[in-house]
Length: 458
Ligand SMILES: *Cc1c(COP(=O)(O)O)cnc(C)c1O
View 1 (cartoon, helix red, strand yellow):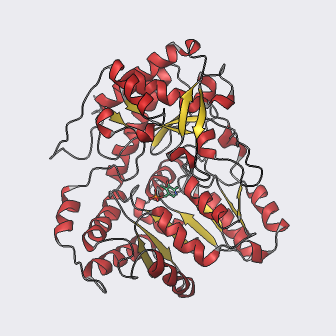
View 2: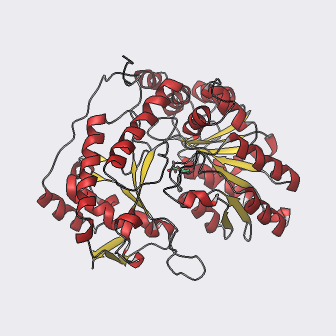
View 3: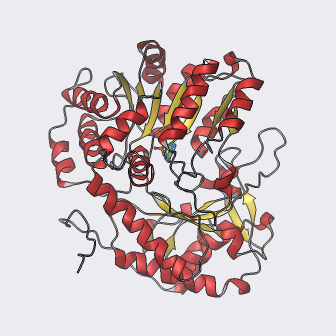
């Protein structure tokens, strides 16, 4: 008999979590203005709001913290991280930042100006926010297949090279500071980009003299999918695949809270010194001195160790198999979600479930609230609230897809928790026709509104 699959780690420390009653949750979510970001974590039983900074560090990472060097300049922790970045990505220059969006702020301050055009594959919300904040435009060149949730395609994060070339042809080179490839593509469902596609983008970038940057939060999960789905890479190690991926980029921004399995941290990697020098000025201004940026020495140590662990096949297999386990349960119950299952999350197709609800009533948010009421599970809306308003017309932007994202923290929950999530969602799914009204906005911020928006039941 073939042995079943088991996790590539065992548990050394635990943290209690609390159940609640439906009555409790009705009160709490109302007080939270139907915004799940406003809930206290004690009001949540299983927290799938994000996989960002919510992972469990290993014993090796915790012990690395103790060796942190907190010197202001030239700390050994800085050099430990610098060497690890060189080893994993092949980049000679880097700047530490406090998280991914800080990396974007610094790098885009050095590269993006008013009127610029930044093509990419479904830019992440903070990335798009930082582009639009500078009065530049993000152009989405994701392949059309990504927008059909039932279609099984191994690399739904890919860029459509024809769409990309149209953009590169249409605008002068000075207007295009870079092409951004997001690996994996968060907004379209944690979907990977193939190395073939990456090479195609690089070839176009070279043809038109444009730089390529990677938004790298889940680069290791992307490499796992290349290894398991792309011909010619099955016998390569994750680290070999990552090295090859990054040989086609000029710079990278990293939210280390994802695939580097730390609770806080980020960095920018650079191939060439000129851009690094330019960005240094902004790093000092916004983040801190160039050898610590927004991080303490101990955190840089844990990050260096996390980069190493996060690019091990056994760890990645454990992680992605858990997401697939949840996906298989949902599939069994007939619940529609973005297929195939992404690396870090299940993206439940809210439009298909609450098809009677008008899009003006924020249907993915409605589904998120229902799941919370059902079992104290906190997911997040990836839909109209997240899409913000058009910066020019100030009208709501209605994205092609409305998702309830169930992000799975790294090394945190067991498959028993996955079983609870699946059944809770099934119960909501079974009573979907009785959910006939959604929500309206009472208060919102001008940009990145989903974090603080206040809603009212219609
Ligand atoms: C999380 C994330 C960011 C932003 O990083 P933070 O650490 O949350 O600031 C940028 N891009 C992608 C793809 C992400 O997933």
